[in-house]
Length: 361
Image (cartoon, rainbow, N blue to C red; front, side):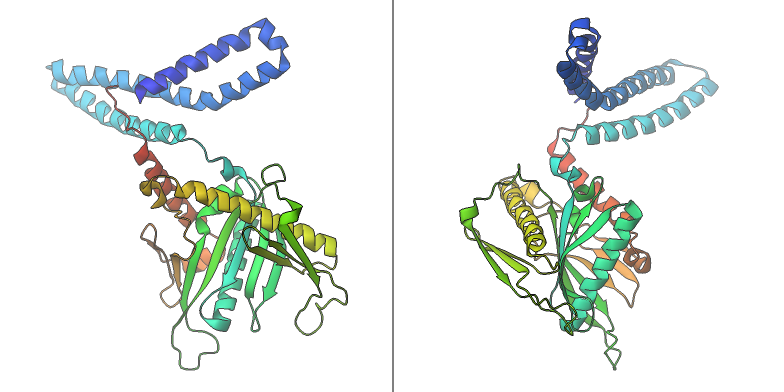
């Protein structure tokens, strides 16, 4: 791995030389491309140079330990050696992470779908709680939410809610939320005080543009119908609701939240494109090694990923066997304490595939 880092440093130096060439500097397109590549490699090269310096200092401290007869000098060298070892480990870990190719979808905006599962009215209420939790998290991150489609539950919450999230690095933070979320608590309607278990499923899709997903209009069946709602206040008197069926895959998307048929159609198409793109991503994932498929994000959306236990005030993420007794904070949108741990575990899985760093080169 050190050999690979040396090659990267040499490439970095070649790019710097090219950028200093007046002819290349005069070619805006070429210079911009080189500057982008230089910027991408800069952090890796700086960390590699730091590591080289630490490795040299380690050799010096080791020599002093082995050769010095002065006990006080040996003690100082031993202390320095320990500190340098800690620095070496930290730098190697950082470099391993920097060498993992970034997932191009991580920077995308996201479409999230939350659906009530088993548990009747309580499941719909829990789906509403999850939507509120994610909304709070997005608010903390400065991300913007737009509801694309919502089907409210009869006693609160949602039978289904689909919404887009726009902001910096949204998909990279939220992609591991896909799966079945289970809740254990005493419903308000429960007179005996018994704990009930219900569930909601979450699907997180990377949002895509027209260039990435091409849809043949002949592959679509588009139906319009009259929107329905509770108590009459949401009922439209015109056929503004839209249902789009993608015939080759059978995917169906409905949208009736807007009064305009055109707006509902645009929102439904946005969701359909995201689902089609996600289907392709999952196919690619299936073609990877079994080791990669068994990772944090298996793509199996029927898999139970997390349990929210209200009587015990705990949240357990089953994929990484992490339990936190901080349920209230998490439900208020403090999700980083979970997401950070999941990302660390996923990076560890990816690092297993790369050759380990050898300090001796």
